[in-house]
Image 1: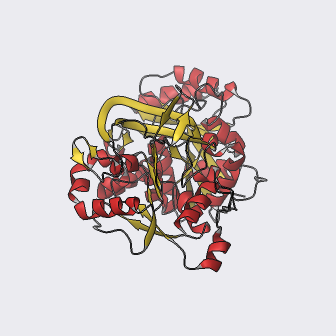
Image 2 (image 1 turned 60 degrees about the vertical axis):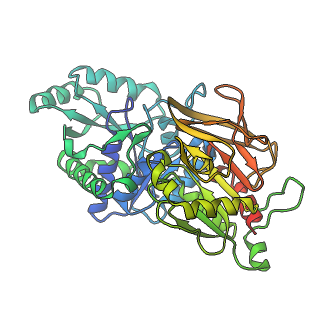
Image 3 (image 1 turned 90 degrees about the horizontal axis):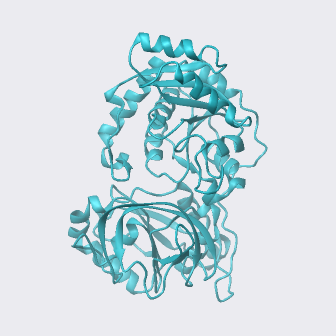
Length: 461
């Protein structure tokens, strides 16, 4: 039994992240072990959640991982906790395009049997708030909206009007928050600025969010609502990779097989301020597959970890650190030499840019015969992907689900051996398979396809 709340809103920009993070920090400050979760593929908000709770922020993505894994992944993250707070994505009922409720906050709330707290931006309304809340509460009878937190309330008079309007709605007001500049988090082209880039300021912002929540919310009522959630019948997810075949038919070594055959292969995982996009389950699956996982920072470390036999470079903001990444010539050379030797290299989005010949004219690793640059166009959305070429991640023909999220382009968009064939929003091939390198814009969640980790570590061994 895990007490739990889902923090949702009618639309983006209402203050979900501020409220959810503030609640996490406030409850953690009261001595509760709080498990933080985020609906959807977002990497940035979980960084603030982790800062608020001291635990890894974990994503619950029904599109990439499947609906059947939502409760198990939730229970895995919430193991040993007193309370879980789940921040929603976009508006409560918004999900994957043309897929009905799939991957929406509402669907995740139903899968978790969790009560929803609706955060409403009340800055430009008074009595109309009752109609809005009534509509959201009655749209899907399986979604239980247990209360409302009114955000950006201007004055005591404004609060009185809002409370009076909601008095007959049947949905209790569980909090009223005034406008507070101290809780704001700066944004740029892909959303909030990650914690790793503004550590001290982020700590102060999270503390201010906790203070605002404590001052404006009924914490006891919120905790009672969380504890009213019924038990879940699912079992916690376990990072197990199993054994899947190579394209040629031979088995990929699993942890037990690797243990019998020698020392664990060292998999270096890029981190630091330039590469902040990663899912906690990836590292857990790499270790379950028998790897020794070592994190390094391409902004500071001039060499790869000792004994590196495989490299994972996830997403992030290399465009913000192009000069510094380029200036670290020893590491760029080491990465290029590792790739040239045929070692497994998995690069997603930012990792793809780092492996390119250049980024906005600044030299990168030069592993790929391609150049990247910033673009005015935002590429965003879920992707159905089919492996075009055999690679260290998947045999040709394997199907995975992922997402794209970037304001850069790379030319050419695909190598002689492409990584993925995509069906939406238009049919195209993209990415690069080159020796042991798999580089692509598509982010994947390996919990939905644990054989990816098994295959990658098998190639490292």
